[in-house]
Length: 477
Image 1 (cartoon, rainbow, N blue to C red):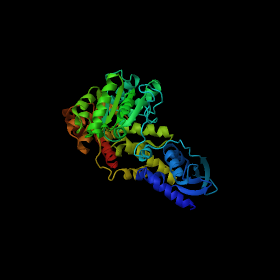
Image 2: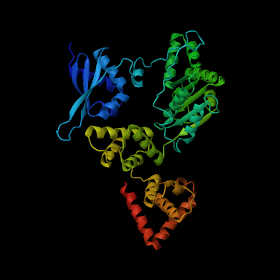
Image 3: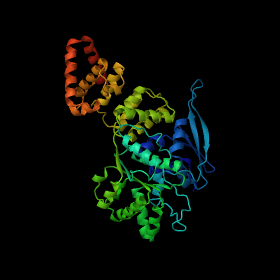
Image 4: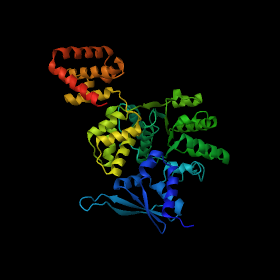
């Protein structure tokens, strides 16, 4: 049966849809148009150069495997890119880039795991106890210290990570347990440590494995009667990174084998790095002897980044992509998406994609449309961080000075106004407000609010400043 162009592409989309989330599918695959199928070469049309580069960087493996699955091992993919040539002759004209899909192109993790549920790590022992093949680290090479933005939310974790990366197994941070909510950078930091060790210590074997993969491999070893080989393999590792250890809960035999693996590595001076969504003391369904070992080293948390850190994350991402957008738009994204780094970066990516698809400049209106797709209702609650930003910009004073100890008159008044608005517009307690201003106590906040009210009654210019700032803050809603 001869396959038509539309049938082939429809089948490809059905395969792709199983391996990406709905939002990614709508953003990156739904706009693609199939244009030609000749001699086992499928040509697809994408809306822009940016679109092509994003597919190449993030989905080339998935596209390549999908095309070969549908058309056979020799199938190839080519792109036709639409370029805006509206400078005079009117229509957009496409040009074609030929891109052979190599059989060894990187395949996304989701697709690897869908085949036989896991891609088992090969047993490196030909002669037991001798290291004689190269073990793939399973690290994401994009996760480095250079593109990990440091802030108060992750300062301890990052500093400990750098110490471990420079002296794996040689610090008191063994194990290093990184914990925090979804999308806060635990995995990024763990991979950054592994990548640094690989680059610095060429003789060390690094392996990153999810707790689910470890469990599945152990189950396979039990079935195959190869538990000894399984244990020997993991005892070979110099730096072992285990992601999401909370999923070991209530898996008694897996916990037992990991307990013995942990003991062997630790006693041999090997480095262990664990990530988790909560501190070890809060883990349920875990053996006490295993929990006690998690507490031997350092437990460091990563929490939601503050406003300034969110801005730094966006600016670093933009710099890496070679894209410039106005600070107003960066501020808007950072203010409204305050849950985790993943959503923040996702919003920026969607904004760039939407701009590319619609061929519109990235402006505040487009940013507002994108933000609405990430959060159902933009909160009307004003944050202390945002108030500090507005006040500092109005008086041209760095935010750090508002939080600092300087007693200069202009800074003191700006600080007091910020505290006044924080009490007026937020639900935070006086104690929490004080913490936002360098750890001041609640009595300082009360004094600041009263000072602002008193000065508004006697100083007309001061009153005008306060009212103008109030209008700017309300306009942000």
